[in-house]
Image (cartoon, rainbow, N blue to C red; front, side, top):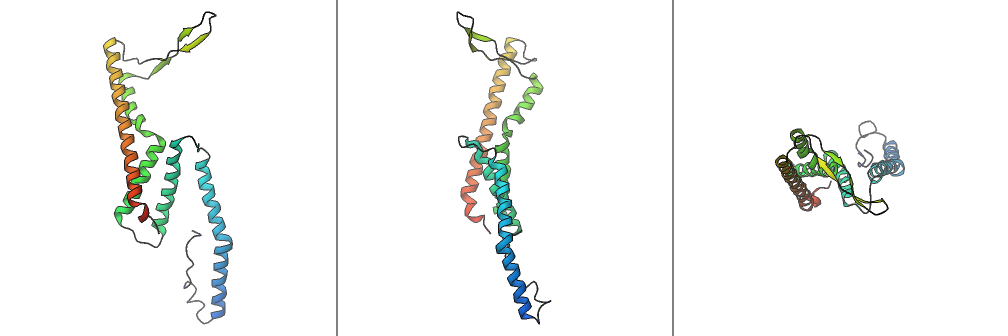
Length: 195
């Protein structure tokens, strides 16, 4: 909005016979852009990044996804409203990258698979009974015991655990594939995504 170049020919038809007035209009527009517009645009950008950085942790690599998502979303808007003409495959790659980053950020990979699993086996119930107790009666460790209502025999419990493990592995493979696609697209198209 504020970062676009000033259209110097915009007032040409109205001010054609008034070169001094035309020069004053150009000067005022340039002054507005340099003095006010750039600063407002900068503050809008700071606000957008501040919303993402509020939940950013330096020790967590997962925090990289929202930053990349925001930056690539802003690049997409800039490319769509800018002056450069881009190939369709470049913009498509950018859209795919944004979509996959959104999925990685929301950690959607596991929920999709386990909704079906819970529909089949029932909701997971967890208990934490004491595992180790010292001689004074103080609990040292707890044991995590899980169960599902539809897995009520030893054979069904074994089958449920095997299916659960297979779903976790499938979800992890999809997540790793998405990461690989995102960073491959970024490395391939990064220098082409500019205006």
